[in-house]
Every structure is written in structure tokens, then in C-alpha cells.
Image (cartoon, rainbow, N blue to C red; front, side, top):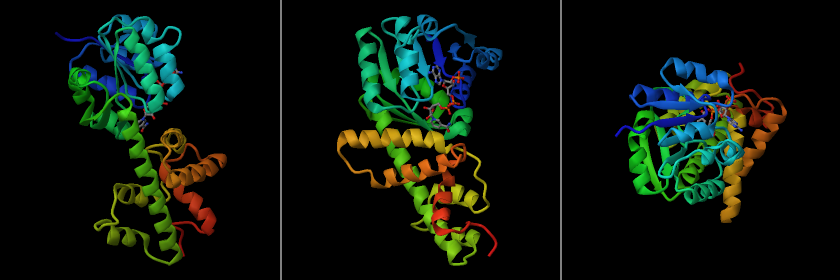
Length: 298
Ligand code: NAP
């Protein structure tokens, strides 16, 4: 039996993901807070709805991809939220990046209504969302994961069931810790190379193939040395995820020394109005300390 799908949140990520579900042939109902954003999807065959509750009332599986923890709480538990329309036996799949702890609370409230839940945050950016190549990190019951698997396959390439509810969000934060501390290493190394008078392009070529190589060095390092700070992922969004990582580390009682260092460096850049720049603009924080500009003629 073909299930009817719902998608809530048609932002940079959600609109590509919803479109890929339509392309795979599934019936998709959509809701977005700014209603005009539904027009584009409606032209592709989606059914616009008037509220998350109204959407949930006609859908079997409901996906959400909105900004932050309170926004997911609003669309699922708030006035006119999914919980007020969802039928017992339906499944809610949250693909936003939010707090693992609040994720577990939302799942428990839905369970009281007989509604299943998966957390399924993603990495791969807007390109991955548009092309259907996202990495999807899933927490929740194995049976729910199998039910959602065909839909995940329409939106992503790597689907990993990590464990119970909340584990998808936790591993997404692991991803973010690795990304930013890696970018700190790239930034420090390139400032050092600049100070030493090295050819930066050659420097990256020389080290990228060895143990020091990384995706951040090859992609974002290469952009940084030509002063291209256009965002794949903005500093503002990165800060949201680092705040979540720091809160989770605090709850678990583990150190997050590198993460907190990068969080504070990004905060300084945000204060300078650079929050809309790509996360690789982290290098600017170290340039200020070193009083030099990476990529500047020597
Ligand atoms: P975005 O373009 O800013 O879109 C945010 C979406 O959430 C919009 O549809 C917005 O509605 C909706 N929204 C926000 N607050 C809401 C509220 N209180 N009630 C109802 N709707 C609300 O963000 P995005 O880049 O698509 O990111 C969505 C999620 O994916 C975030 O959790 C983000 O961390 C995660 N993510 C993003 C990327 C990336 O590269 N962008 C990569 C991986 C994961 P309006 O249209 O009305 O504003």
C-alpha cells in the first residue's frame, strides 16, 4: 500500500528533500510557515495544507525539517501542531538538527498518542538535499526505520541506523565536532604557511594526499586561500549545532575543549557581522590574532 507522506519545512534543505520524495512517485502533502514557499512544490505536484495538524490528519508518515529545537517543538507539539492531527499508527520523522534530549521528550509525547518517531538528521548540505545524496543518521525503533527506509533512499545515499531515539542527533553532533575542529587545524596550518612565505596552493597539494589530508582541507582550505567565503554552511547555523554539542557534552560530563574554543572564535566573528559567511571563515579569527591575511601577496 502506498503511504501518503507529509513534509513540514520547505527551507534550503526541506524543499529539495520534499521534491525528491515527489520525484520517487510518492504522494506528498506540504506545509510551510511562510505559505508562499509551498507554491514551488505545489507546481511539482505536492498538496499544500493549512497547518501541521491538518497535514498530519491526512498523512501516514510526516517529515519535519525546520531550524532549531523550539521550532520542532512548535510544529509537532504547539498549537496546530502535528500531535493534534496525527492518527495512531502514523510515524513522525524529524530531519532537523536539534537537541538529542528534547528529541527524546518529543518522541515520548508522540508515543502517548500512539504515534511513532524517528530522529533522522542529515549532512550533505543543500547540494545533497537537491541531488538526493544526503547522509542520514537515524535513531529509533528498527521497525520504524524499515518503514521509512524507502523514503530515506529517495532523499539520501548513506542511511545509518545508529540506535534508539536521540542517537541520530548525537551522531550528527559528532559530525559537527569533527568538521569544526578539522577546520581549526586547516586554519592554523594555513596561517602558519602564510607566515612562512609558502605558496599556499602548493602547500595544500603537498599534504592533501597524506595523513594530513581531509575533505575540509581540500574543499574549504582551497576556498579560503582565494578568499572565497561563500557559505556551504553558515557560521550562524554552525553555532547552533556547536551549542547543541556543548550542551550535550555538559549533560554527559565529558570535555569539549576544541568545540568550545571554536564556538568562542565563531562568536567573535558573529559580533563582527560575519555570521552569514561560510564556516571556513573561521580562518579569519586566527588571521586577526596573527595580524596577517592568508592568500595576500607577500
Ligand atoms: P532554512 O533554509 O532556514 O529553513 C528553515 C525552515 O524552517 C523554513 O521552512 C522555515 O519556515 C521553518 N521554520 C523555522 N522556524 C519555524 C517555526 N518556529 N515554525 C514553523 N516553521 C519554522 O534552514 P535549512 O538550511 O533548510 O535547515 C533546516 C534544518 O536542517 C536545520 O536544523 C539545519 O541545521 C539542518 N541542516 C542544514 C544544512 C544546510 O546546509 N543548510 C545541512 C544539514 C542540516 P519559513 O519559510 O516560514 O521561514
